[in-house]
Length: 177
Image (cartoon, rainbow, N blue to C red; front, side, top):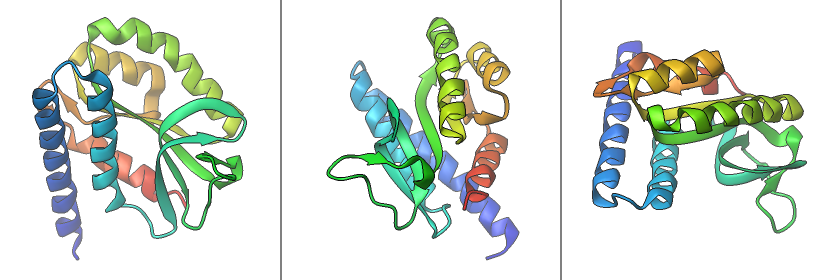
C-alpha cells in the first residue's frame, strides 16, 4: 500500500467515523450516556485498523492505583487484566484515551476543572492521557488545545473535518510499542 493510499484510507475512516457518530446523535438525542458509550465503540472500531499488532485496545478499563475509569486503554497485545477485573497493571498500559463526542462553550467550565485531573493522572501513571474529541465549537476547541496542548486531538470543528489532527493522533498512537 502506497503512502497516498494510507492517507486516503485514514481520511475515509475519519469521514465514516464522524458520519456514524452524527447518526447515533440524531437517533438517540438526549440519551447522553448511550451516545458517549457508542461514540467510544465507534472510535475503537476505526482505531483498531491503525494499531500496531503489538497493541490491544481496551474499552472502559482501569489502571492499577487509579480509581478513574478510562474510555480506552492501549495495552500490550498479550496483556491480561488483574484477576476477574478490568484493571490493568501500570506497566502494561501504553496510553489512556479520553473520548468526547462533543464540546461547546457551556461545557468549558466543567472541562477546565477536569484538565488538572488529566495532568495528575498522566503524571501518576507516567503514561500519556490523550483527549480525542469528535465535534466541537471553535471556542471550545481553542480552549481545549490551549489547556492540553499536543495531547488534544479535535476531529471536527463546526462542520469542518480536521484531518490534520486525525493523522497526528494516528501517528501518536502508532509510535507506542
